[in-house]
Length: 223
Ligand code: GLN
Image (cartoon, rainbow, N blue to C red):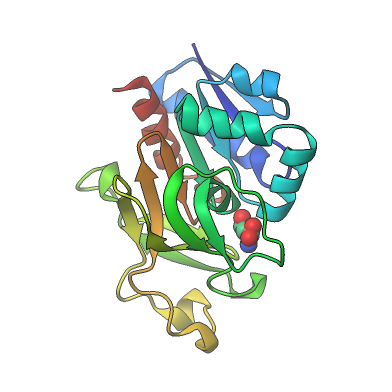
């Protein structure tokens, strides 16, 4: 039996829980999915998802709950499998740009610098079809949902693999990205992995498409 935790301090944790369950059903795996709010709950998990939301809030609540150090230990010392989506990616990065004065406490673990809110505001959210080679050569494009999303603006360390970039022919008008941001887009790094840590800029949990969740569960089992 595998126990998967979803950090449940703020943000879209329910959606992740539902999609982990869906992926486990597909794979016919016995997975128990728990909401993580304490170090004791974290210690029970074979893998952890950090959801999207507001990274400054998640970080503040984690600090107040005494969870920041246990999370850092889980990711960087115990090297357990951890996946962050959007705000979760920001928290798992070693460096973040465009943070408020004074910055925010990160968990770290991914040798990258992210740029927060890279595409602008909530109204500039968009969808883009992503080619995710790790899902298989003939996998259909994955619907990438980007909501005030970060991108990886620089890879800092060795051992970071880029798993996805935005497509070259992203139709910016159709995707709803404003002209003001037209310099961004093609080639932006939106998924990375370094050892046990996976980060995606987008929100698979908002699509109902459980393929990345299934792939991640299988990778935890080493299959
Ligand atoms: N912009 C948010 C942040 O900086 C992330 C947005 C999201 O998770 N959808 O934390």
